[in-house]
Image (cartoon, rainbow, N blue to C red; front, side, top):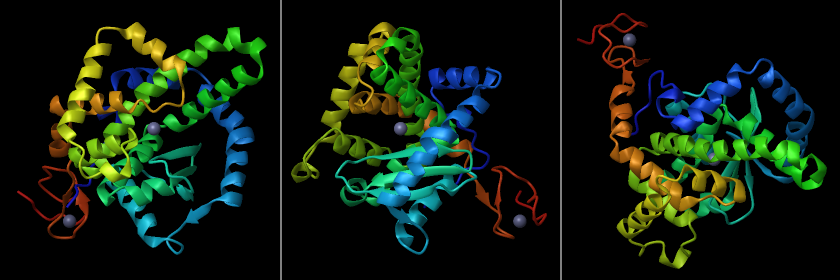
Amino acid sequence: MRKKFFNLDSKVYEHPVDRAMLKYLASLPGFETLTNWILDWTYVKWHLVDLKGSNFQVTRESCPELYNQVKDIVDILGVDEMPQIYTEWGYYINAYTTGFKDSTLLTIYSGAVDLLSKEQLDYIIGHEIGHIKSKHVIYHMMADILTNVVHDWPIASSLITPIRIGLLYWKRMSEFSSDRAGLLACQNPDAVIDTIIKTAGVPQKYFNSTDRAVFIEQAKEFEYLLSGSETLLRNLSSLDNTHPWTVLRAAEIIKWIESGKYDRIISEYRAVECKHCGEIIAPNSELCPICGGRHK
Ligand SMILES: [Zn+2]
Ligand SMILES: [Zn+2]
């Protein structure tokens, strides 16, 4: 039985670089309002029309199993809004999130649904819900827009490129935060590593015969190669915006688990069900704030 969390703030598990950038962006006067305004008039309207017109919308009625799987994860991670869910045909083990405020859109590739176990898909969905919880979504869209501007309008490139490189580097770091949210959603480290192995391109024929320990070794070796070279990491981040960098993501999540932080969050933020009224209450509560029932 997976644990729900009580008042789990994303600050508790966000990667430090991601945390610092989110704090900085939130401190810029008017930045969020301006970003929301630009996105509202461009990307979101266009994307919503595109999804509504081309993709299968998952609702409680149209596809209850997948809808409920997303709803469970939204509840586990304590996110207020339920995203609109769509599926997209394509055998990628992936999903993505767009939109903002109360209209977030979660699109899941059919490959992720068909090729993953329930727990592995929980991790992929949890990763995306993590982007919503940390409010990464609007800044990710901004980074995508700047990338397109640089591509379509090279004269702007010298002005925009430094901002874009900064955003892309941060975007990589925000992926690490959301991987942690994905792990907190599925609560099974092996399922996370197995999903990453599949995402790294192992053919379906070998899904059941790959050795998790050997892949973990590969991830640790890659992490060692990059360690101590912030410049190398930063430059690699700016090179290719689309490659998911799966092996490094595996190394990061393994490092986080081994640091004990994952276990600490599970034990410190585990919600307790009131034995009298069944409401979710804070861990270590003496009295239930809803019914007044005693727990100690
Ligand atoms: Zn992501
Ligand atoms: Zn109670």
